Image (cartoon, rainbow, N blue to C red; front, top):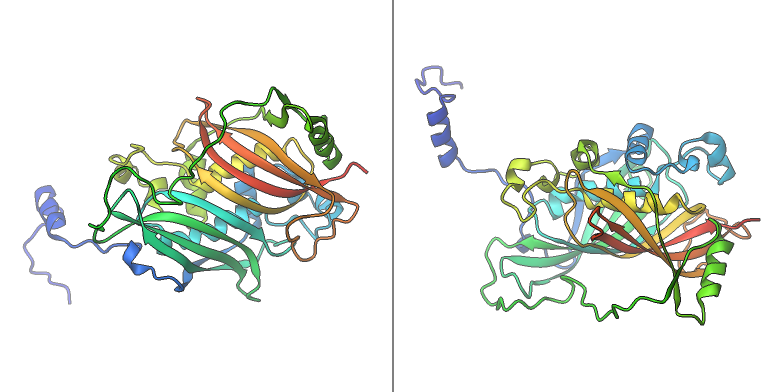
Length: 372
């Protein structure tokens, strides 16, 4: 029943502030203690992968491969129609998992074993997402956090078939800090990758002469036996605007306050809202793809986000070619026939900002079209 006799003016500013001080907050998200190894979580949100949502993601992140836009180009690539872009599929799989896994905040420590399980996903597919807790452990440097690794899979809701899967690791706030952790500045394995990399660069950085598989393989052959590497930067840049900052993550049901709650982020280390990592990643990969003839995406490993990206930052791309093989070294999605059509190339991609500071890195394996 409604109490119409209540004399309190709940909208009086002082009265309302007093009510807020006394009101209990209905929290969203889960603390570290909620996760146990082996737990399987079926995420309630799901996305119907539409052509409009797909094209919005591609347009905003500069992924302009005609096979994902034009019917004739799609047919030439072996698709029935322009399919869902793999970057959008991955972001739309991660988005619905955020509410259950990482909405409480904490540092994104990395993602690996990103694998596409089928050749093509078409508009109209309803996506359902589930995650399994692979590992939980204490943080070696921050007693107020724990570290959780999940394996997440995006599935066709109608058939249950896996479409894409990956493993990701996050720091997750504890409800009760772990007093046994000595905060001596040390790091738990996995928080940030240790590196013993030699800062000395090769004498030469070679650029492929073209965009086809043979061009990458020839450049690698030219570098062999010399103090050289195949590495180059891409010309395009994309400045972060509101469409990228809040629009794209919210369109994938990513509820992390880091991307859309400026008031909550004012006291955070970044001091403002930050970009969804998959947006930064997709922009960097788009820059790379614009300088190659990509036939299919196969997988990604060792993805890391190195610094905050905020409104006004501009994202550029840098690529290092790691290897090329006519025979794929990782599983090719079911339905793909690349015989005599494409060869496998392994890349390391780095996204960097206008200050030439790395913000993302990862290794990528893709099938690149052969010239003939």
